[in-house]
Length: 160
Image (cartoon, rainbow, N blue to C red; front, top):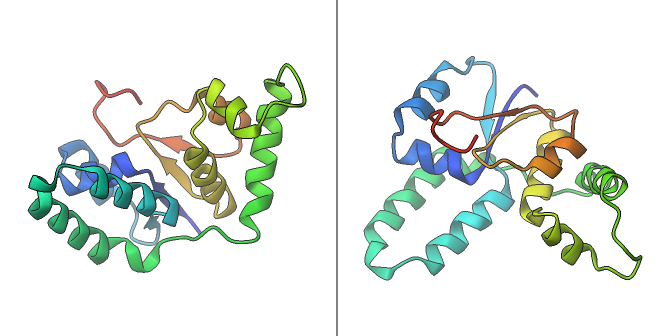
């Protein structure tokens, strides 16, 4: 499969019609896929539940946008995703070993600035050989997942 897996910041940019993101979206070859994963959809849903209830109309519009463009083709975490996740996590551990074996995985990742959702999402991109489009730096994950191509469709002034 050729194409892109979009992080939530890119989905949001498309919804808000950020010109640079829309231009990149429209420039993707027609035989390439543009997908999101269920982790990203979960992050977006959580954001909607946490957000100000006064934004209900905007949330409804965003949900309509997601349903129209991404939900039906969202990539799921599967049994085979575990291999990509484990290999990326092992590379992080090798590059940044914890001080003691008693350190919990989540605590160690947080200390390194790694978001567990980002790790799973990059594992899905790797599993499907998709370019991961994100605005986030993900420095530790990028170094551990050197076989994953990253891209940013957002303006240069962003943190890409």
